[in-house]
Image (cartoon, helix red, strand yellow):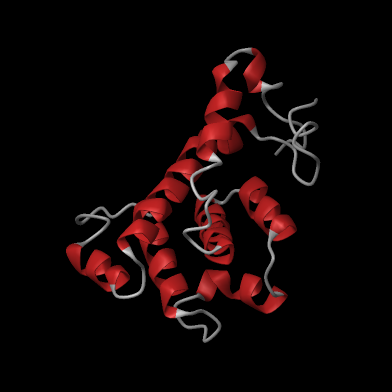
Length: 156
C-alpha cells in the first residue's frame, strides 16, 4: 500500500468534482441530524469500507469521547449510544453491507428507525449516506493522503 495518492488532484481532470463535493457536504448543513450522529455514521461506514482515509478523517474531526469513538465498531452491544444513534448506525450498516440473501434495508429496520428518528432526519441521513457514497470511489481508488489538509491530500 502506498502512502502517496494514486491520483494527483482529481479536480484537474474533472473540475465539477469540487462543486459536487461542496454540494454534498451541505446535506446536513442545518444540523437536522445531530453532528455527533452524522460523525458516528461516517466513522462506521469508513470501518465497513476498510478505509483508513474515512476513519482517520472522522477520528480527527470528531467532537466525541474516545470511549464512544472506540466503541463504534461494537455499537450493537455497547451501552454508550442513544437509540437514535443506534437507528442511524443500523441503517448505515444496512446500506453499506452487501446482503447476498435478500434486501439490505427491510421494512422492519425502517420502522424501527422511525421510532427514534423523524422523517426529516431519515431523509438527511439518506443524504449523509449519499455523501459518503460520492466520496467512496475517490477515497478507495484515489487513496488521498491521510492526516493532512484537504489542500495537501492529493499532492504526490
